[in-house]
Image 1 (cartoon, helix red, strand yellow):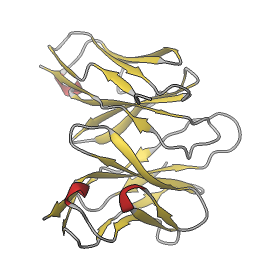
Image 2 (spheres, chains in turn cyan, orange):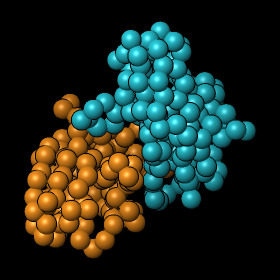
Image 3 (cartoon, chains in turn purple, red):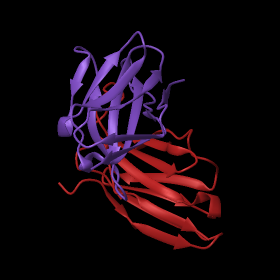
Length: 118
Length: 117
């Protein structure tokens, strides 16, 4: 079984300050990790992903995330928050598959609401 | 490309009625996913198709729910009969993912907000 934990339901940060949205995961084998963002009344939008290689992954809108295998974490970060970053953020995990078709399930966390205060 | 298209965007129905949600994936994507989002349970995967074939339907809550994908450009999620606890936002997503390349991101539609009275 695979799971994702986002320990904070809500994160508040002042505009211009750095932000961090936390994510830890549990999966057998090597993980693929994703961050998505959801704006009100919209579907989820892909931000970034970790597959392999460099532990620091850069994505859309200035976001980045750091994969830490020993801590099974994949925290989302941004050096300087914007009011327009206010949204719901989801971390997700799946595991690498072997050859041949098989079940592919992306497991999402419950989401963290980010509020950037002007 | 217009992205993933879902219809209707909003549906209000009465308990016991049949509800059909529709999805058109992005052209060329061979995987399609149906999700349900509620405040209580978050985002849940209901069913996943690869090349129009249902691969994993373990998330379908009960027999009242059924999903089909008759061709590569169309899928439906049907609830019959509907119940108030089915009220949620239903998302369709597509991905150029095969069973061996599960790292490709999914592209989500705008969702259908279903209210069952």
